[in-house]
Image (cartoon, rainbow, N blue to C red; front, side, top):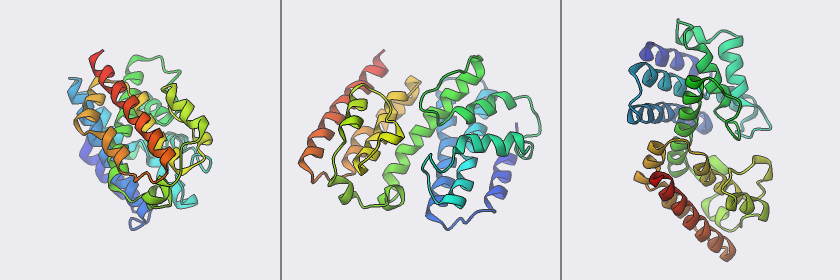
Length: 256
């Protein structure tokens, strides 16, 4: 498993897209961020060298379908394209996987992990190694998304300024999902603050203690909440509840 070769091929693949586009740039940086988070998770779990490399390869390839989605629709929204399924199509139905890795030994695990990485819930994976790597990529994706949400402009992510997000409030249906400690269903998001909360609710879907350790080490809960100036009094009250709930959930997660 030659990771350097895979990265060179990934760079070659990106030549087909506009690297100056903010959304494309965001996804390139995100891909390498997820690759690094996958490496850290696998290393902290003391997995074999092979599984550490496999986790990184899956991280490198997990969002390969996103670039075509952005090229065609200029959107991350799931109703424009199922980027995970399209990534599987590119890699395995069109055969591009062999450009990144010559051996087919790990194809089943790679295919499953990429196909499942953005599912609302991880279900239907029975094989132990495929399940392990599906969980790793989902955690790594969420961890780097925290960095993305802190570093990139709100305009690139949500199409409005931070001030505009803070003028809105959480809709009742979205807040109720959060109170049930569930991820937020994309189609239920109505306000810009609903979208912001959906990124925070990812923490309810973390699989491994080492992943939650990384969230706490980077103080992601407070930093993400504090990025928005809540000028709407209702939003300010709602987000105080969100902060308390997530802080308690994360602390209990690492204790258990």
